[in-house]
Image (cartoon, rainbow, N blue to C red):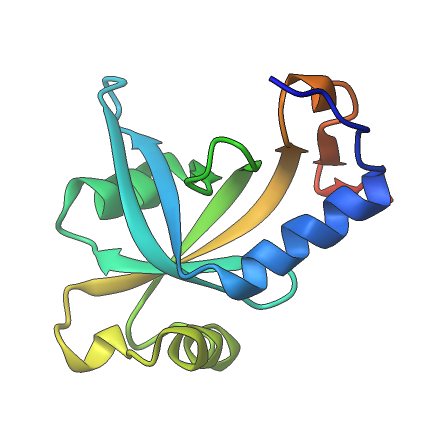
Length: 151
């Protein structure tokens, strides 16, 4: 492993925001009331303040997001780690805010409401964001805490 210079908090935040704009899929981790974990990749959209997800309310991820009201999101590359812990608000297809559905449709080209009424939308407001590119970046990895960017 080659250790390189650690990025500044400013650069880490820029890199996180760039990934939120360019990536298509994000890993979504949830758990049910008994603690049974569930991990799936979903399409997502970033509106500048929240991550928007959509999945069927009838599947384990949809139920866990609705009932648990929190999640951990992650990008797939272990050499460029971004972890987002957030609070979840659930919307049915008829009550999702226009800004949320428009962000989702613009990013994915898909409106889940046209496929099935069982699709719900989940607004994830980040509370904690960590970003690191290897062990040498463990220190200073929190670019957001308590819902506030560190820079």
